[in-house]
Length: 154
Image (cartoon, rainbow, N blue to C red; front, side, top):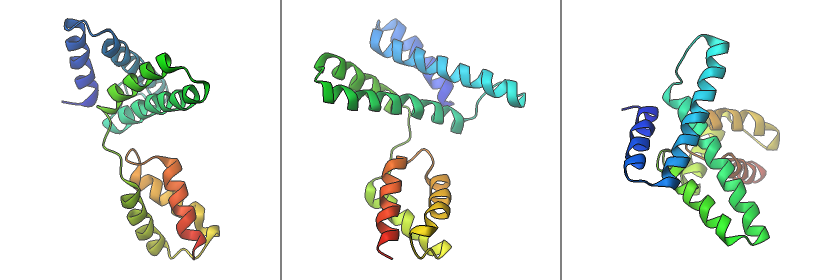
């Protein structure tokens, strides 16, 4: 079962269970997927997103929630903070497991060796290859930090 089909199935389950929060988050995610399909369909003639694109839409939703959480922590709004965290947890159920910092370091070292990067001026090519390799499995900010650390020590 594809991710979109899983979301649709889980939406039905949430409706049956009268789980308002889950229902709301899944509906919002499905709406974003539909919007992306419409946008892509207008550009390429396709009508459905592939799994990779569906994951990208969900990651964008999760990133928005994480940014909201970061802001709410600064302004001390515990009731809204709890809601955003619950929504993020629901979205994360559908996303691939994120790599640990150690795994990112390992992947970055491999790419640096492949490209034979010698310093910070090679940051662009390293990041380009590494992000395409880790797409959807690692936060870009963490990857950037790791690559900067590794290249600055060369």
